Image (spheres, rainbow, N blue to C red):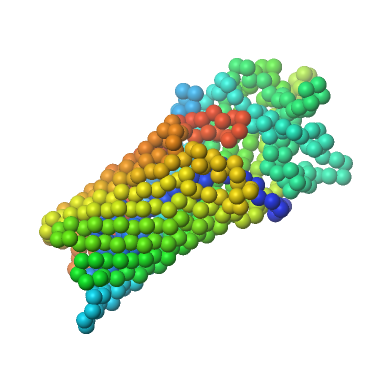
Length: 499
């Protein structure tokens, strides 16, 4: 993208710049932890004794026998395939990152009393990686981007969208955003690029594009960013068989999404011959949450339960957009109208409360030979809320009506062969949508191994997560969707030191 000199707007009111899919993307947790944690499907709620297990059940820190610190390096690959009007596009993307680091300190009771151990822990890890690029391409026989602009022009007239002799594109665009909001800015871009015109008879805007035989569309989405979660932990071992813990969690969120929508090959009699529409939204902010948990040992069996409070995020959005339209008149003269206001829209802070979650866990320890474990995670996505409520009535209503409670399953196992450990796991993630056509359940399989070098633990994991959902091009007008199939491969290497 070209470098731009940006004029800043601070809107005096909150504008809903996020749709339901984007809100869900911000509030979904897909943690990436230590290699041992990942290879066993994340099923550590009843086990503990792993740095990333603290993020599942804070009581897990008190299970440690020795002080430990360590870190994890991660390599991930996303393979996306889209299908749109019988046309398919494949795109791959790779990323290498430092995704986890933490430590646990143990204070053992050398005297009497019921508190055998107190633990203090800190863990930082990726809570969700947003890096994801895909392309949608095909010939749409029904719709064009002009319907998006026409929907946003309702209630406006020519004088609202015109630029006077003493005015500028940037100035009017800025004024419309401050006084009329997002929709007026979209209509302004379309009118100033001569994509739409005002019809005095119907007293409404009409499109100058003709696509009765269809139009070729190419939609590109490029996303980057990460949600990092920091656990500050304290745990206790009560007598021999009971463990309790608490986390204070902070979150650091950054996500940037750029989309480019291109249309060509209109009908021969169309005044519009090409459209290129670019948008970028950047969201960043901070969050806070609490966790409480417990683990009980009953001979070879382990049982765990943990509760995570809602995460209270304070976020802020910035958006930028431009449009480039090519047209031809009756005399065959071609024109190119580029409307780039060079304006960065900065919206006031808003808050998102994600739903709380409850994790119940069970595990069996088969002597020194191995472990089998299982977690069930319940989370009601319909409880997500944006605030202030008066500014987000529509999206909050959509969240309540379209999202539902999910129960995710995690299963993991480990076989110990002296200093070598072999591991495998399976995870099933339920779709948060009531409508299974929007997004289906996803699942992952994983495997790995670890080796104990007498004080240094080296572990490797590989996980494959597959998901399938429908992606709408826009939230109004051009709402046609493409099937998006994603294969997410993740390899981790962890180095843990005992001290």
